[in-house]
Image 1: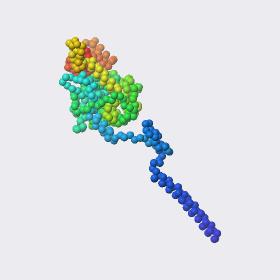
Image 2: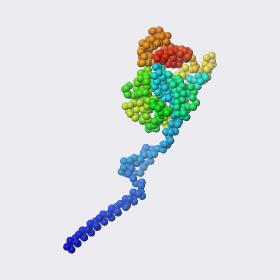
Image 3: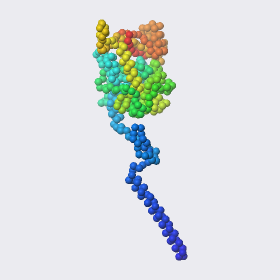
Image 4: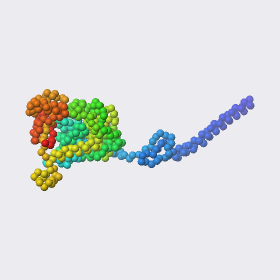
Length: 421
């Protein structure tokens, strides 16, 4: 009995001793670890590689997180850009025959024409937009958003100064509006990775122009896609037919090698012709179309270099349409640089319209346009095959506008173009 009691006590003491030793060992190990953890927080587990142009960081250890240099971007930046750009963005409404309307955008720029296109008694505000917005044969109406009243200002009629179907760019003008600030066009394309903001009037009940943000994802030379993939931002909301080539004569953006800025800043119907700007409000592109197959990467804007080329070509064309003061009757061989508009012809131009039959168009050209059967058929076929044909030429712009309005009343797709004789 005594031996049994002694054996049990010995076993209990041994177990207690082992437990105490284990607890003591755990305590001895845990205390230094806790001390290091709470007194040396810089000893973490992160991979901090040397960044291009940056300084080497502390040695790497065992984690998969990457520590990047912080980029100081103000949280007020989008608000600042919006306040600068939005007042200059306009709603552009093309109205076709049969009162078919679409929806697009445009924005105010400095006049590239240096008064070459100015009348003696009137000044203009110039806007840049997409060619498929200021489409051939349409009446163009422009209205700006008034922040004070949260409504659109009164609608004014616009005149197309120049249009390039291949680039999908158009320059229009409206009576002078001193309340609008001109946006500057960048001299070069934006860099990939730079922040971008897209503005325009989407087909919704939003008050004023909408704004989206993203980055420049790349620069594309052309689209390289089948005709049934790329769609202009206004296709889904247009009542003039879904195909841009049918709506706008020979417009087909898929068939060119235009330089585009690709961004993930969202675009939607109605935002075509609006500006794609950088953080300083400089325009890097004009919203053009969306490629649904590329999802977020499918937002395309005609690049700044293409814009500069387009504006330069318009300026050169107008220089060819002006004469120089002092040239007539001056035998000294010297001329002044002050330019005045030269005598120009006003052409009433017919555009291809798939909504009209060739027989009906030829008939209206004969009865309203006073063309004989041969000439009416010739003009109609020229428009059908090349996209446009000249109906009549006038030296008086008012007479040309009068014929244009008479033809539009008969649902004929026409417009007046001023050209050098």
